[in-house]
Length: 223
Picture 1 (cartoon, rainbow, N blue to C red):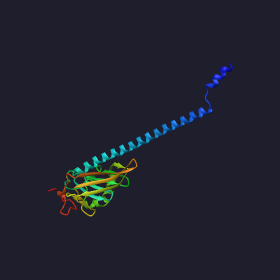
Picture 2 (tube, one colour):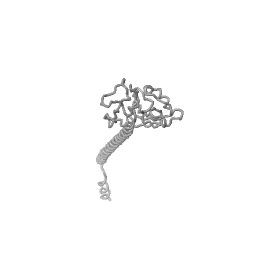
Picture 3 (tube, rainbow, N blue to C red):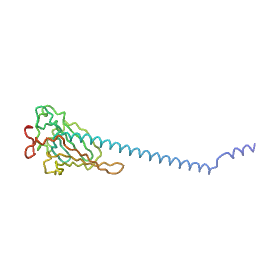
């Protein structure tokens, strides 16, 4: 009987062995948790980068197509680039109507596009002159009928640059209706690194023949 008890006793673990086993297990679990956290952080960073890259591609496509096929760059007012999209109102040839305008707007951290295709009938046939788009009065009226699409979020340092046909930059005090090329630059933070992006486009359907001699407004028709 005594020999059997000794045999059972010898098959157990000592306190030191248990402590060593717990320490080793703790080290292994800690390593696994660290590795899992690293994989999770890498996945989140990759997912955030993919999302922002998708936004850049979408914005580049939408804005480039808009500018490429628009008729005129009408104004550049601080955080707005005002574009005459097309002369598509029946009977209003050579006249800028509200629903033909698109605003590319930026504030502190995003770029969005706004059009006014849902304007009421009493406003649709209103004639807008180029010099009226140099201030915020028209925009204030149209905002109640705005269709907004956010194309870039979480961006910063957005700048609009306009160039003439000879690639000379058009400054703030020059007539922006003569713009033939547009550059939109902005910054995005990806994986704690700030990267700068550019959207460049040229007007293919520029309606310069509709401008008066000074380039400050449109003539009454397209002859």
